[in-house]
Length: 177
Image (cartoon, rainbow, N blue to C red; front, side):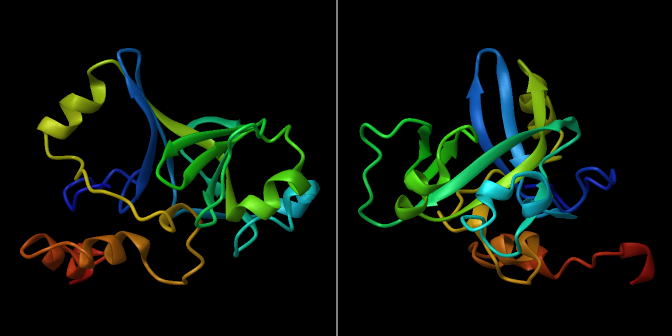
């Protein structure tokens, strides 16, 4: 997630779920930026499976015309032999949007569809971490599909031990504080 010092508008107060991190670079999606575009308007077959709010989320500045989908598996659900699902971590899966949503729906608590993604070349994210642009924290399985109408950035920080949890009180508009 972005640190309080990262004020560039694209990533300010963002929570990014890292999907892949390897020698080629890193790829993730911003999970706390809903758009005004309804899932039904773009991918109607996925509208019923989408977690509330049922809008596309802005996953990042790269390839905004492409979509990625994350889902949270139901406790005890098995994806063995199910085409179109790839486990990312624990109960979080990457879903191929060409899959049949009626086969996926019984396995997931919900899905979130992201327009675009955030990407870093090899070493780029590490450099940004060294500059303290980002805070690395573990996610809950529910984070990618959270329907809470709260500030997810602050909520994730509040779950952390002191003194990190104090950052949750950092004002959204520091200049107005």
